Structures are given as structure tokens and as C-alpha cells.
Image (cartoon, rainbow, N blue to C red; front, side, top):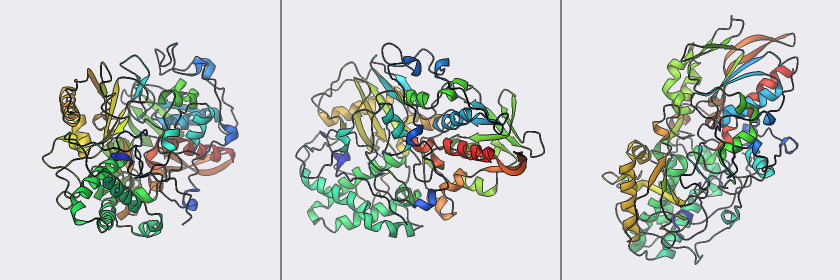
Amino acid sequence: MAALDLARKTNALPVLIGFLEYQVYLSRKRCMYDDEAVVAFDCEFREEAEIEKFDLSDTSRRDCTADGYFSADSRRTSGSQVLQPKLSAATNGVKVVVIGAGSAGLSAAQDLIKAGFDVTLLEASSRYGGRLWSIPSETGKGWLEMGGQWVHGDGHALYNFCQANNLLADNSRRRRKRSADDDMFTLMNADGTRVTDMRTRLKIYTALDDTVWDDDEYDTLEAQRDLSFGQHLLNSYQKVLKTVTADKVALADQVFDVYVRNQKEEYAAANFFDISVQSATNMTLDGPDATDLRVPYTDVLKLWAPNAVAVAQYNATVKQVRFDRTAARAMTVVLSNGTQINADHVIMTASIGYLKAHVDTLFSPALSERKRTAIQSAGFGTLGKIHLIYDNEWWADLMPDYWTYMYSSGNNVNADRNKTYPGALWTRAIASGLVAPTTDRTLVILMGGPQAVQMEQMSDADVSSAITSLFRQSTGKNVPEPKKILRGKWSQNDLFLGTYSHISMDMVKKGITTADLASSDYFYGKSVNGQNVQVPGLQFAGEATHPKYWSMVHGALSGQREAKLLKQIYSK
């Protein structure tokens, strides 16, 4: 296996108060992948010479008002933005229906429109963006990201595009390498008591992090196809325990608890023992873990895909995708209102959560057995995200920009190895919190595990009350209730049913890979440039289909991969 340079390691970050980073996606930087295994997917299609650069002062190119963000109708694009497609004899008249106007659908549609294909882009909701959802802040300043928040890593197409267009905020703070000996690190107990033995806790966390992501062990882990990520965490922790004195074991359990909560946030995991260790070893992320944006994420998408945003049809729910190789156009997309759209190709970009729920009825005839198995066995979970809006920044002298909680009891590894916290309030599973980087007077709470879904099912009042109680207990102050809370509630949205994917143990046991999730179906013979060739009627794109960037926005831009496939077919 050919190893890439692994990105920097950080130490003890999630348990720190007072440190200046919003270090949320902790471990993606320490992964390796097989160069040869991903050549066929080639998702980095935008070469440096192809990156378009825009003047951010030109508000006709952005969802902006004079105040900075969001036009009255963020779904439309002015005519000046739309580039005229370059028609070719081969692509002119070839009909493609793209389902979903998220990152995958927009990136596919944009490239196909520019290549001269006849593209129909269907979106079931009233907006574009998918799991990227930027909204104006309730405070009147800046915006909130209800879904994806950051650009992860660097050197990939999305990062290069944002960098070329000056869309990235200063991220130097998150590039700084820390150590457990840094005097700036402090810790916070959920019960409000003073944290003791801070340096020991940080050293244990560092040792655990180094053991979990031990570069020398990656080849061994790659070979252990039946190893779950949960068992790998436990194995790593047992190694660390051998270096801990008997009087520090309880303290080490507390540190392990923090570590697991942060990993559950990263993987949107309900149960780590259902996740394959391949979710860690196969993922690749070089560079900073998370870079903030200077503009809303939906603005980035609009800059990336102005043609696609301009033609998208909203509130267009697909009822069924049909295939008939004997028809003049082999594919038919049936909408819930009865409208039928005939096409040569369909690119499906719905979330794996949605496909899991509808695979048996959405496609006719049924997909191939392997394709159905891939969808049904894929891992998909929920990252819970809560925005708390206040009248004032009461936390200014009490809390840092980024924090998490330590708990003094209920952390025994053997008693609760998956950290489900039976009998505890849902707030026990909170992984981290941060001061919102895109607005004022707003805090953001992040969490994974089954409690994330539980939280999304609760009323605003109950969520607000529980978090306020936690804040009051941990600070010892009469913290005010937020004046409003906002949540994406992705697990409760029928169009998504969660946030992002992972490699499950079920996938590994059945020999399923991300290549199977990306594979096409409904092949048929078609005359192209005077030759009869086999072409895919149904293609798939989205974060879950990327071999090394699943769960991330630049993985969702795999729509470019499917567009490139069609361009290659019709250029022959």
C-alpha cells in the first residue's frame, strides 16, 4: 500500500478549555490510502488552470445584500453569472436528469451544462445546498451553518477553489501544533468543580491519541478486515492503561470517555462497534482539520455552480426512476405530481439515509443485487448540532472559544464500553461546544451517538432547559436561557434521515466498498458517434461514494466524477 504523508497530530485538543482552535474533526488527518485503488475515481478534476476566480465585491455573483449576505431569493442566479455552454455534436441533445441540488448534484449539473448536455436538475426541497444550509443569523450579524460548517484538509478541488477566490478565513490558529506541556491548556468539569491533575489528564489523552493513530500500525489494521473501530479504541486504551499507575486508572477512564465522545461526533456514530476500522484507515485528510469560510457555504456552492443553481427546479419530488432499454430514451423520472421526464441518463445524489429507506420502491426494475446490498449495508449516522442564540455573550469571562466536559463518574470502560450512558440525560453525550465563528451572541453544541437523534426529536423548550442546566452547573453561574435555539434536525428530515456516512462492519463482512456505492446501474446499448456502446442509465454521486473523502463536502463533489464519465463517453 502506497502511503501518503500523514498530516500533523494534535494533542489533547478536545478536552481543552482556553485553547484557540475549533478542532472538531480530530482524526481524519492521520490516514493512508492506496493510490492505485482510487485512480479510477479521479475526483480531483479541477486542475489549477481550470479554477475560476471571482471578484467578491461583485454582489451579482453571490447571495449577498449590501449588508453582506443573502439576497431575497437565494435560489436564483442572475443572468450575468451563467456561462454559455460549449455545445458539441456528441453532447448536444443528450438528456441528463440530475436528482438532488446538493453539492453532488450541483457539481454534476454544472460540468454537464458547460459541456453542452441537456440537463434537468430536480430538487425536492425549496432550496439548493442539500446538507449545506446557510441561513441569516438571528442576531442580524453574519450567518449560521445548519449543516456542514468547514472546509476540511487542503490540496483538494474545493480547498483550491476557495483559496483562489479568497473565500477562506484566517486559519493559522488551527495550524499551530500544541503539546500536553502547553501552559495555556485548562480543563472543565461538568459539575463545576475545579479540575485537578490537569497535566496528567492531557498526557493520557495525548498517549491515547498517538496509540489510536499509530502510523506503524496502519498496515496491520488494514489487514484486520473484521476489526471494528470500537474494538480498536478499546485495544488502544488497554495499551495506554499499561503505562498508567493504579491510582490514575479512574482518571484515565474519564479521559477515554472524552475521547470517545469526540470520535462519535466525528463519525456521526451511534455504535462504534458497528463501524469498521477501515473508516479510519481508508479516509484521507492532509492539512488543517477544519478551515472557516469568509462567506456562507451556500455562497461557495453558487460560485462553484452558477449554471446549475440557475436551472434547478425546486419542490420537485421524485417518486420513481424507471428503466426501459427498448424506449427511445431508456430512463424515465416520475415526479410525485405525475410529471414524467424522459432522459438518456440519470444521476442520483440522494443521501444514503434516503436511499436506504426507499431503495425497494424508488427504482423500477429493482437495482442489481450488489447495488442494493451496498446501499442497505452502508453506514449512515447523525451529527447533532444546536445553535443557541442569546441577548448577550454571557460566556465571555467564563468559557473559551471551544470546550468539552469532563465527568467524574459513570465512565467505567467495562461497564459501558460503547459510552451509551444508560439512565443519563442526553446532554451526557455532548462532545463539544464552540462560540459560533460566523456570527455573534451564539454558541454551537455538537454531539454524536443515539442521543443526537434523541435530541433532534425533542422540543426546543426541553433542549434549551437541559443545556441551560448544564451551563449553570458547570459554571456555577445563573446562566440565562437562550432567546432561541435552531437545529438542522437532519435525522428527522425525510429527505436526508441523517448527516453523513461511514464504512460499516456490515459492508466489510459483505465485501462492499465505496466503489460499490459509486457504481452505475441500468446499462444499455446506445449509438454514440456512429458506434454502439454500453452506457450507464443510472449513476450515483455523493459523499458516501467517494473512496477517501466520504462524510466531507469535497467528497460530495463526486458529482464531477459522474459528469466526467459522461463527457468521456460522448467524446469518443
